[in-house]
Length: 400
Ligand SMILES: *Cc1c(COP(=O)(O)O)cnc(C)c1O
Image (cartoon, rainbow, N blue to C red; front, side, top):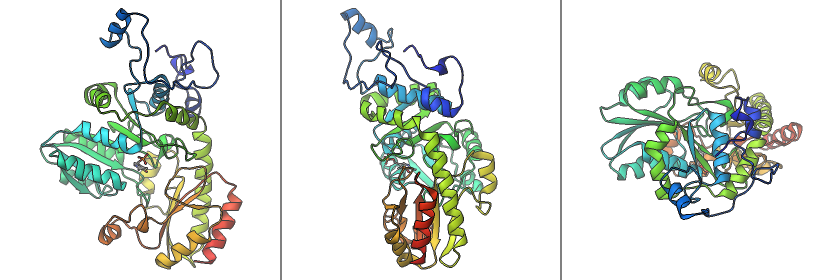
């Protein structure tokens, strides 16, 4: 594919990459990225088909393997992330599932941070477990625990940072060092940080995965995911698995996500400004709020790592109400513009009660260990006018 994007000539800054990287125009010279809704491709001759299949001609063969619109999305993400190659997937979970399954084989051992998205825990424990892979869960912020969990057959470290829902931050560079010394690779789920605020590959991680359903679409329209790594890792570990098991992203969704990327920097900047102001309000309402978890605040327990590792805070805020579940439900129900839902990174502000929804399947002890109290709420800031959000929260807190 002849790259006609400006990025072929020069490395641009992220806000420019988000608009231009990966764009390949068809002969019509369309302004907006073209949507190639096609299952496959035709070859002018039998010889051309043969060359396509034997790899002499690198063109497209079948949309389960790759598609021009999907490839534009992958290339844009690769430039943003500094990755050598990528594969877009139908959902964030397809990305996590493929990346982890391709990193290990029967008899290997995995070390994973305990604070994982629920379905990620299922993959590590159940899917990999069934395949004969053992896993040890550790407190991701405790570097000595990562080290102590290493066995001679450890091949994979896996973590999310910041974590869901309490926004703890793990030192990615330090964990990568321990992984590499042990002969393992580090896979990072970077959803909460977004590609703008944290670059796991530059920090030493080997593979990065995203749910593009979150900030990348950012407008609640479709599911998607992506796996990014070096060209060698993708070729050796993922390429054949991906072709033959078919977790591919629909070209239509790839097109939606490309358009989402165009406005990612603007949205995330506004969301983060809004989140910081809401965190400030919550911290001032000591009559109702026991604790605020926000990576942009000086009182965050991982403030020193955040300063080293991240270039922005977060569009999410978690906070613990003094009145437990009843107070949390009253606040949810009293909010006007903020929707009760479980997506995050959306243009619309969203509030979630993790203990009864996203983290309801955890045992009460596991929730307690993860700081997920009955009074905890997770707020995903949208791009609404901050004064409307502040008024909404102030009035809702009065009812807590
Ligand atoms: C949402 C999410 C996923 C799963 O993504 P889907 O697109 O819903 O499949 C994985 N990891 C994290 C951290 C998430 O927030």
